[in-house]
Length: 87
Image (cartoon, rainbow, N blue to C red; front, top):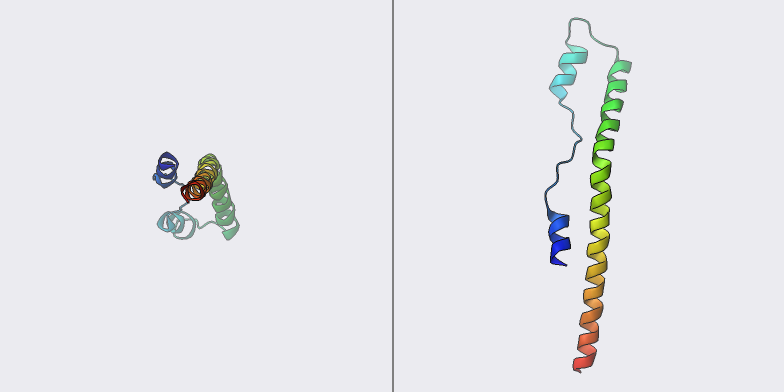
C-alpha cells in the first residue's frame, strides 16, 4: 500500500503549457503578422502533441490509482475482519 501511495504522489513532468510571449512575438508583433486562423491551427497542433506526450503518463497514473484504491479497500476489509475476530 505504501509503495502504491508513493508511486501516486511521486512528481511527474506533464507537458501542457504555451509561452504567451512566444505566441505574441511570432503571430502578432512579427514583421508579417499571421492570421488568427494560423494561430488557432498551431495551438491546436501543440495541444494535440501535449496530449500525446501526457497520455502514457495518464494511463500509468490511472493504473496506480486503481491499484491504490484496491489495496485500500482490501486493508479496510482486513481491519473489519480483524475487529470481528477480536470481539
